[in-house]
Image 1 (cartoon, one colour):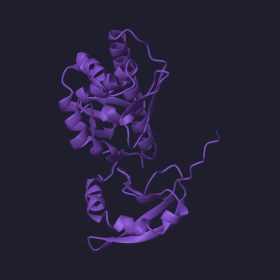
Image 2 (cartoon, rainbow, N blue to C red; image 1 turned 90 degrees about the horizontal axis):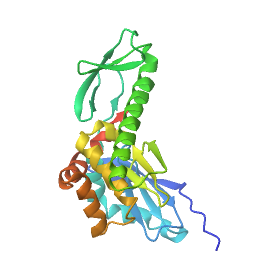
Image 3 (tube, helix red, strand yellow; image 1 turned 90 degrees about the vertical axis):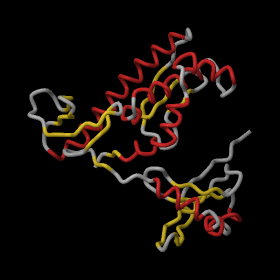
Length: 242
């Protein structure tokens, strides 16, 4: 059967008054959607309404008005951006590090006495810091995946490190794992939980009792990292390259 091609292009833009200010709402058409749904991007604060059909487009803004309180709450959670630059305070494995100029004698970026040192011209600092964080994330994620996968007697196919907005990790049926690089900013017990969660999916592609028993066997306490991600996870999206 031929699949219906979904489109997420902006059909039109509208303004919605929220708390005395006009908020732009992007109205999008997606034939795969089952109903009207409002979304607020966790990092940019973009507000959008997804409509399943052309007919539903006419009701999109009215639908968004009915969700104004929810939209306001979500917008209040969008973190103020922190540029990756000298002077920034960046949590690495949950421990705050100040970014300072380096002398260029030890590479592009390195750790030194609780600071992140970055060398070279200022216009290259942001990209160098981002590359450093991604390398640290990949190294940690690969090591912890190998460790936990060995404990359940399986081996992953590959690991991809990305910058995802809605998922900290995922596992395909073919045992390909994907993680957000931003997990390296969180405390180590949070990264450990996300890795164990996705490794457990290599055995159980569901969230049933057997799945959760595997996760608990791997790391023990699951409530603490779940609570941290629920309460603090959105703050990891505030760190961005300029």
